[in-house]
Amino acid sequence: MRIAFLGPPGAGKGTQARELAREWGVPQIATGDILRSAAAAGTPLGREAARIMATGALVPDDVIMGLIGDRLRQPDAARGSIFDGFPRTIGQAEALEKLLKERGEALDVVLFFAVSEAELLRRLTGRRVCRTCGETFHVASQPPQRAGVCDTCGGELHQREDDSEATVRRRLEVYSRQTEPLLALYESRGLLRRVHGEGAIDGIRAELKRATEAVAGRGGAAR
Image (cartoon, rainbow, N blue to C red):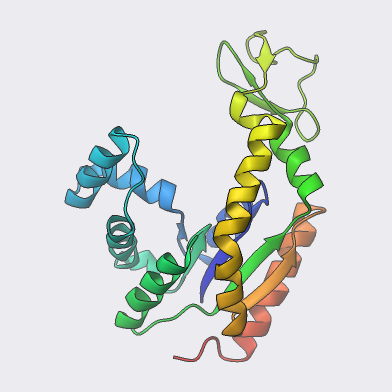
């Protein structure tokens, strides 16, 4: 199966994609990961992506799609793949559809992780980072043994500026504006399934499996 996991920052899609990809023996395809991997490998597209990222600019969709195409040609993608947080825009969705069609493939289902804004704020603003060693904690889900003190080196824990409530709210607003048309597109094509992204990780994973098994039972997407 070929599945896309969509959801706002902090929705937990990366954690679920990583675990299910390992269980199913298919790759987890996240644009950040493939950009870093290609840049480190020094491939032509990787060098181009590294050059663009060094300027602080966004990597254009054609470079990203080229990297995704390279990733899909690797042997482990023959059995399927999980796209983690991709596509993000209508343009990327259309480019992905074209790429898969050229391979005789298509997305089987798009799973959207629905999480309340209050919960997203709790998850994203709770991160604390050690000023000395960089170790990461969370005030609710992974607290240090002593408040404000790193378990590893005893350094001071602090909240990064991009984890502040005001910054997180802006990130969520941008995400909502970008993806609302994308969700409407996939819903109109009968591909979108909403998954409740709050609660125990195992419970969310069970809901994901039920959603994918239901699609698999119908023979997947029409090709």
